Every structure is written in C-alpha cells, then in structure tokens.
Length: 131
Length: 131
DNA sequence: CTACATGCAAAGAATTTGCAAATCA
DNA sequence: TGATTTGCAAATTCTTTGCATGTAG
Image (cartoon, rainbow over all chains, first blue to last red; front, top):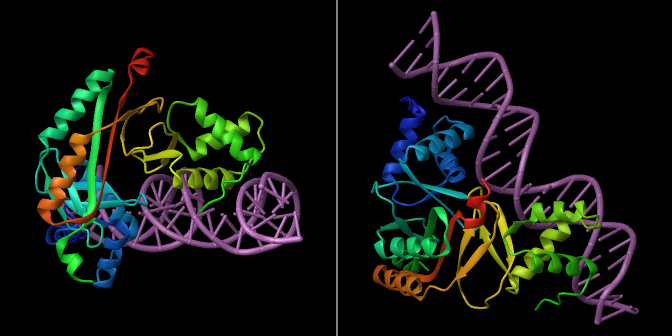
C-alpha cells in the first residue's frame, strides 16, 4: 500500500486538479505549474499523478494520440466520460445499460476478467460558441 | 486519395494480417516478419499499417500501455471489439444500443462532432484453458 | 519516366528510472 | 533519524520524418 505523503508538490497538484474541471495531461499540468512559478520536476508530476491514479483519486483516459489525461474524480463508482476535445472538460456518465451490455457479451463469448472502456469525445457547447 | 501500390512488403503484411485473427502491434509484426526472414524496415511497417488503416482496411485499437494494435477488419461498418488481452484475438461487435446511447447523451449535453470509443478487453476461452 | 515506396538513421514525444540530495514524520 | 519524495538527467519505448535510392505502373 502506498503512503501518499503530504508533500508540498502533492498539495499543489491536488489543488490544481480540484479546481480544474477538465482532463489535463501530465505535460500540460507541468507547464501550468512552472508557468505559475511553482518549483516542481516533471518526473514528480508523473509519479504523483500515477500514485494518485492507483488509489483512484484520479480518473485516467487516453486521447487519440495515446497521451494520458488525468482528472480529479467525483464519483467513486465505475463510470465513463463525455470529454470535450477542445477544453478537456467532462461529464461523468453512469451507464448501467452499457455495463449490462458488456457483461452479457463477455459471457456469450466466454471471456473472463473483463474490463471495458467507453469514452465519448466531442466538442462542448461552450467551445462551439467560441469560434 | 492514396494509391496503395502493390509492393512486396505490402503483400507480405497483408498476408500475415489476413492469416492472423488477432490484433498485433507494429513492433510485434516487425519482429514476426524479420524473424521469418523477410527483409523489411520498421518504418515501412508503420507507414504501411497507417495507410491501410486510413482506408479502413485495418481496425486500430490502443492497449492499456497506449501501444497501437492493428487487425485486418472484416466488417466495413462502424463496430467495436471484444479483445483478448492474452492472444489478441477479437470478436467484432455491432452495437446499435451503444450508438444510440452515445448519441442521446451527446445531444443531452449539447456536444457536437462526437466520436465514441468502446473496447472490451478480457481473456478468451482458449487462453483461459492454457494456464 | 516519374511519382510513390523503401530503408536507414536521426528526430520526436511521452513516460520511466537511477541516484544523490532534500524533507516529512 | 530513517524512510520517502524530489529533481535532474539519462534511458526507454513507440512512432514519425528526412533523404537518398529503388521500383511499380
């Protein structure tokens, strides 16, 4: 089990993610922090995000280029996202229908240890207006 | 529009993918080919896979590490996959229910230019027996 | 003939790791 | 003090690109 010590860097990252309501990449977060005058290493950002994701303090998705995006997660339950491609903001979706569908299929084909990933990407209303 | 010239390398890649019924990464395919004595460059493998994917001759998914996996695709229609984590074999799934669900949600939140990605990973029956 | 494909090596980008120095408990 | 965490730089991995050469049409 991880200790998750309360260091200054971890606090800063936590705070930023809590304020932010969209997904952000490790790289972008790092730039954001250094631009804001924080002294932090890129590796620390990666390690912190990774450890926070491990204990499910963060949601993680991958964008089309394969880059990992992180966000403080609201719901502890399993859920999916409707993510804005432009600003990264996201809605958390419950989807019992999808869960049921996935399990049914897995069973039909005899698959085990099944995990599914459902992410929807689009452009949110706010970003549509901005162009 | 792409020409997709009929070169020896493209033929070899096509053949291997046609025989293979699972997803495979560019790296793995390259190793497979060179191990089999084929003379081909890694860049060519990447470029060929990319051009084939562009004209929808291949399905593309990303595994958990972000690596791209390719497979000759059977159905021309939009579809999803139930992929074996162990051997890469996959079932193609039609899912009108999921399509409808995704569109409905996108509409509800006012999102546009929506694309969704649904992939299910698990362990197929054959691989379960092999352990 | 000539536009496109190939191979190699170098470039890129995201992420991870080794290790000494700093720091939380 | 003693175990973690940090920061930096170097190392890894996957993927893309530049460019001279080869080749399908």
